Length: 488
Image 1: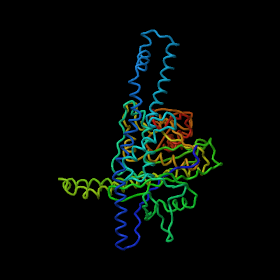
Image 2 (image 1 turned 180 degrees about the vertical axis):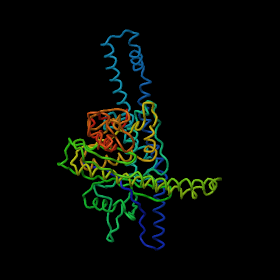
Image 3 (image 1 turned 135 degrees about the horizontal axis):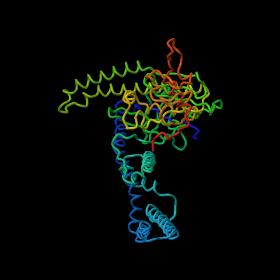
Image 4 (image 1 turned 90 degrees about the vertical axis):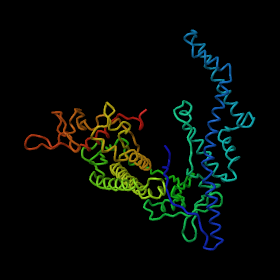
């Protein structure tokens, strides 16, 4: 397990302006021209690099196609039953095929080294040479090095899917983040001036001033800790948005807190609900619980935003025809959609923080959640009525991601369980029967011998039931049906 948690902070930046003189203004224009040149060419370099990554693989494929012996072996193995080959013969053919694979790889490496047979793996160096030959005049070498590393890593993650035709080579468009090494010769590129302002020494002798604004995300404190050596950093990037603003995407490595008091046998179960967005309970405690979030608050804010968006779309429908000034007219709608996304993101941060605080308070070393792949769907792959609202209006995948990285920082393990029947099973006796979850708020166990799963007994002999979200959260905490996050 890694000893740190990696997060990315988004901070607005501006190129440094050294005075109001005409000379200073001209220098600033030159700096922006240099930045524009880098930004205008970066995506072209990225596409060139990934194209040559594919070419490097395709070269080895061509060697196989052109080898008569390799074709013979493939045909023999393909028709092994018809030709009545024995196990020893098949084994020998496979062994010879593996030797040919190694030989093709050696030939490819020799080709990429420019005819040199021995040496280190040349794949990443070969793509850098191609990029530098074409773009070193417009993109600083430090940026090209980072870009080449990022693109080759991206290609490797998609290599198998590309090989089997499940996807095409990624295509990069203008506006991709401009990567750069945050350290130069082990020296941090982030510095502080005498007036307290913080800036970045960017490749190409550009200086970007960090603008923290209202700083609701506490970015200044995080950067201060980086400067003080409390946090480490990784290669970062600067990205220009469509509106012309530029942001530093600072990769920060936060040391994990080693909490020796956490009990690995105590598990927090987290249920994502409708009446309550997040409900947490323990596997070994019949009473401890916490509900986080409110359906009413969620509905009020989200419905108000949706009403504003519909009204704005209605007004813009006639005014944006013809294309003249369309982008400017749509800016208000884009701002509203941005506010909506930011609000949901903020709520997810609040909910995830509450879940981690509940786990730490109860010394729980594990958090369990339902896998959301296929979440809310029945045997016919149809979304159940009680889940339509949840899936349509909330970013629960993002919420789980935030819980994951905050749990990781706190030293808490996160596991995913199969969600099957977690809401219809009694968490006290384990009895399953359809209809036990009476409604979104109440659960009543139909097992005659179960008392805790029925709740308080009313005067007329009926039962009040227990909180349905609490029951589901307890089932999630007590479940041993551990699965991967994504369904295979």
